[in-house]
Length: 275
Ligand code: PDD
Image (cartoon, rainbow, N blue to C red; front, side):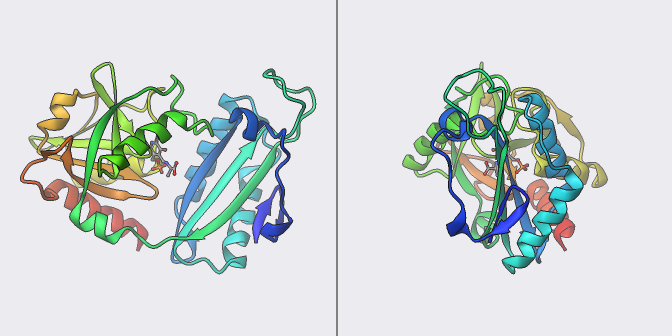
């Protein structure tokens, strides 16, 4: 079953209008929510971010977060999903093609679930990454359907045998193509501030909270590509990758090329959130 506006229907009964503005302009927003043990993880935070994205693109959401949460829980139950994800998107809906907002448009909401196991191998061994120019727009804090800047960067990374592209704007590291980036230097954790140049990741916020509780000093400060290359530890965070160690950046080994102690500690703290 999928959620189609406020109804649960079989996927085969849903159809997309060829003039849906999400399809033609990327005029819409989305969320990816993890489900652990049959329960959506940090659902309220995801729905709060969805509302923020909707306000930023002036998209009136006809569903309040409470009702939406109820519907998403029903969707997970209907599909008997235990480990996986909910993909949720809202577009400005169908209207004759014109860049300006239509006078009458009805937003279209779609949510569906997918079974996905936790990325155990990546979490244990870490991943290779490479840097890539951040060619995205200046409102990366909006979780918009326009993802070409991320898609192109990720594809180049994959073609180089890497799992993630780390994006660089004007010499400083912003975030990954679909994750946030952290470095550890002399025991201090650094990550880009939550401004318009990055998505304010839910996993990022969880890690910052865990770091605070563990007494790990944190600086939300932009850092250079050199600082990334020379970091003691690097890891990325995200709904799909959790807290994932980075062993290589641009073929350069990070630390001794294995996940470091601060990363391990934060992985453990993150696991305790799930349990
Ligand atoms: N992406 N930065 C970007 C650009 C992202 O696309 C994502 C998540 C994150 C991490 O945010 P969170 O911790 O809230 O998942 C950071 C999702 C998973 C995606 O597009 O598939």
